[in-house]
Amino acid sequence: MTAEPIFPPDRVTLLGVVNVTPDSFSDGGCFVGQTGPVDVAAASAAARRLVQDGAHVLDVGGESTRPGAAEVSVAAEIARTRPVVAALVAELGVPVSIDTRKAPVAAAALAAGASVVNDVSGLGHDPDLARVAADAGAWLIVGHLRGLPATMQDDPHFDDVLGEVARELEASLARAQAAGVAPERLVADPGIGFGKRLEDNLALLAHAGWFRERLGVPVLVGPSRKSFLGSLTGDPVAERDVATVAACAVAAFAGANALRVHDVAGGVRAGRVGAALRAARRKELT
Ligand code: HH2
Image (cartoon, rainbow, N blue to C red; front, top):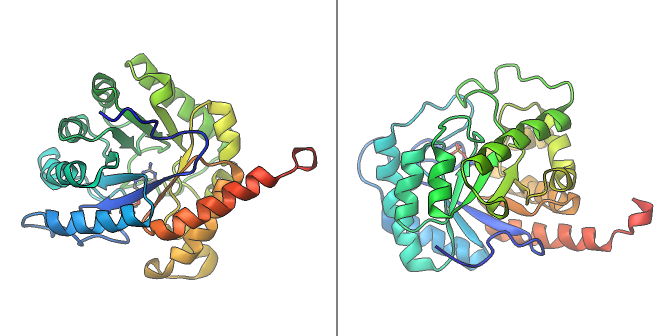
């Protein structure tokens, strides 16, 4: 377990995405097919480039959580992620995060050397996940998600998106602490694209700092290549990295502590510009 602070308050932490899935919405099929083995060497080479580009953490996932995605079995998810986590831990010298909703998948990754658990379901999917993170002394990212990825975009609705998401994240953070996760190991994520309308996603990104103040933990956002950016720009998935950079810069300006991105080179620059502008704000005028 790494002793370094993975989400220090004085930097914008960059998580580089390493999706070991056949069907992720923007980068599926790079390292594994619907059947057959995982190409660990290719995943490792791609992850090495993310680190060279400035990633502080590598976020390894074995199940797509895009709208409409089918659930993957625990065995298949472990078979995809564990060898990649082990290789990245051995070869790359940066903390590795496991992007999963399931306790056994997290346990396998933590045993292979991961130090962060990233749960987009905010502990809503598997009641044992927080205990697994607590037992390992791992960091835990709790995301906001109502329902299941398969149906989350079926007519989502909020009367007060900021208040409702904050209250539900507070409940997730309380569950994590009740299971033994130390408060200083917690990160909250308002869940961009997870059961949200365009206006919800925009409000959540624009108020990242408000969440940070209210929840008292670092706030991570993951706008990378998501469909709300396509709605705004008309860009297809493969061409959304420029819009992602813009969203990340604004999120960092608004107070986000961490950005989860596919294009790390762009995310690093967005984080620097957004954080510098935030530092330059004259509080009495904002
Ligand atoms: N978004 C995705 C996956 N994991 N984790 C956090 N904490 N926050 C996010 O916004 C987030 C996440 C979805 O993006 P991606 O991994 O690119 O796609 P897929 O779920 O299709 O694999």
